[in-house]
Amino acid sequence: MSYQATIRSERFAFADLRELLGRASEEKSGDQLAGVAAHSHRQRAAAKVALADVPLSDFLANPILCPDDDAVSAALLADQDASLFRSFASLTVGELRETILGDDITPAQIASLGRALLPEMAAAVAMLMSSKDLVYAASRLRVITRCRNTMGQPGVLGARIQPNHPADDVGAILLAAVEGLVLGSGDAVIGVNPATESVETVGSILGTLDRLITTADIPTQACCLAHITTQLAALEKGAPVDLLFQSIAGTEAANRSFGIDLALLAEGRERVLRHHHQRGGFLPNHQVMYFETGQGSALSAEANHGIDQLTCEARAHGVARLYDPFLVNSVVGFIGPEYLANERQITRAGLEDHFIGKLLGLPMGVDVCYTNHADADQNSAENLLLLLTAAGCNYFMGVPCSDDVMLNYQSTSHHDIATARRLFGLKPAPEFAGWLEGRGLGLGLATSVDFRLDRNVRLLLADAGLS
Image 1: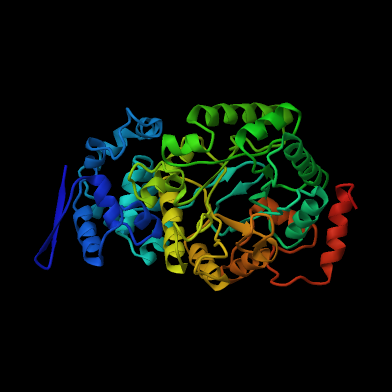
Image 2: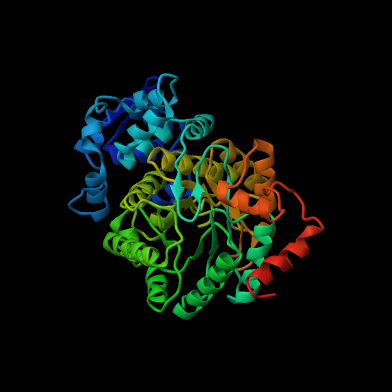
């Protein structure tokens, strides 16, 4: 089915929904690389005009990737609340945008509506929104999840401690984790990206972090962000797995390039749930999965099927929704300037990813980051950090000095998160905030390290028997 629009007497035609979405998406270097981007600002404007008039039912009648050819498409279609969708199927994409931004709909109603949307519909709505629209709409949506603590409530801004080390030195990882705890980070997760894909290394990291968490009675969770099969192998050897991590994408072929499929994710989730029931110590009805996504991942695997970056990302969010995760975050800007070239593109992608994730019902965080060869700097990251805080982002990354010495990219620091909390009057997760107060550490609102740091680091290390 083709679509058309006229801009100042110039007529533009789009062969199908896939082409229309690519041309309507905001400028991204990855879409240009893939050949799906608009050729001019006029064509992009025309595509947005045409997209605004597309009935939502067209996305069901004309799928951009056939469910018979792609397991992700089939799973997303099966997951949709078809009964609820029928109540607003006659809306156009533009009318859906006006509904979401309107004063007559409550946040609960938006959340319910989101459950009935295919990810492609959410992507289409985002394409018609300004940055302000994306911030405002996302700010109305809260997604609350539970593991050892509770994340996502109003007034809460969480932080993942990311204590990576280029040699997987467990002592250095532990010290960096304790530093983050003292500065108020770590309520989302203490999450380590291992430098080596080794069952023994993963088990050692998880065992050490579990010792810290249990002996110091910290209401948080640990994760080692190795491949899912490595984590499950470590689990079989006795490693304590709080959250099961995996990077995911929006097409079957892209996920295959990651060495995963939907069945493996489902199996892993069930195994960790059984493991938790045997261990105890977790909140009732808790979630156990942690997913990372990011615009450009499907294209980098040559598995985007001619679909634009934003729509592929939305479909990855749809995959995450299948498994009721505790945490999801977009690693915006991590893949590099070939996919998001500069500050403007990274900022736009971060706001899009966060909004779409929240609309689809995900507990969205964002790794506000950039590679050293992108046209961006730390001011770029701080600008996006503040926009996403205003948008109600669930959590950010706490990286020592914002510089990840293992992954060799730039992110956000514990001090950045503390400053955002202070500016917006936010606190860590309530259970974690209580633990901080009990330690005399305040609520992670300090914007500089003070004289208490050395003493408290020693105390936490002593609690873990590692002083």
